Length: 76
View 1: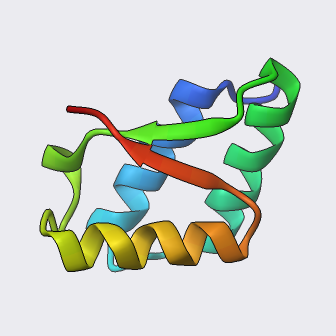
View 2: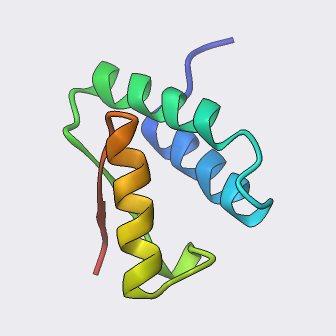
């Protein structure tokens, strides 16, 4: 089985967020590896797909991902 790309890893994170953050750390590690392989500096998330689409929720998500080595930004 091939390594997941950034889009697949991002979808896994959305699914994990909907499932009360089940295995979120493993999905973040997968996303980090995919970003590195593809040479991308930041992960881009759609705020409408987040459980908490408010400023506080987005900032908490950015801080949590940053602690695990992934820079996050949100699409407009």
